[in-house]
Length: 139
Image (cartoon, rainbow, N blue to C red):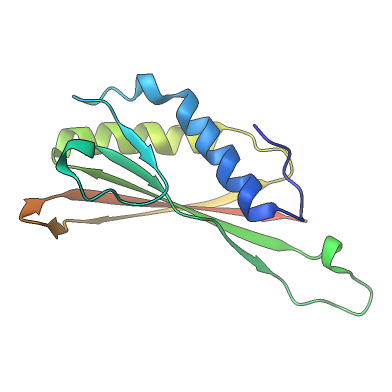
């Protein structure tokens, strides 16, 4: 894992989340190997996929006595799981959620985990998709 600092916050958070999920790659328990990527790959052979979106960083309003280094930062990390099989979706989803929720990232505090489900169709392939939004705070 990389050291998370304010100068390259989004990049550091992405690399840290990627490294945590990559370390668990062989233990997802799905019926086929999982592709870990930064963007959805439009190829049926690449399924199942875990897509880590670039983190979004929001900073709180500054006050007169604070500098950018002391402001509160909220970081959103969105991870999508795409599969063709419902069983694989639940297995991979649970593993991703557990891995990220229980991994301590130095300098970040996990304060919220939200999830959602959809069933998109891409090139006549009925996919199953679950999205996990991990919300962190950093001072």
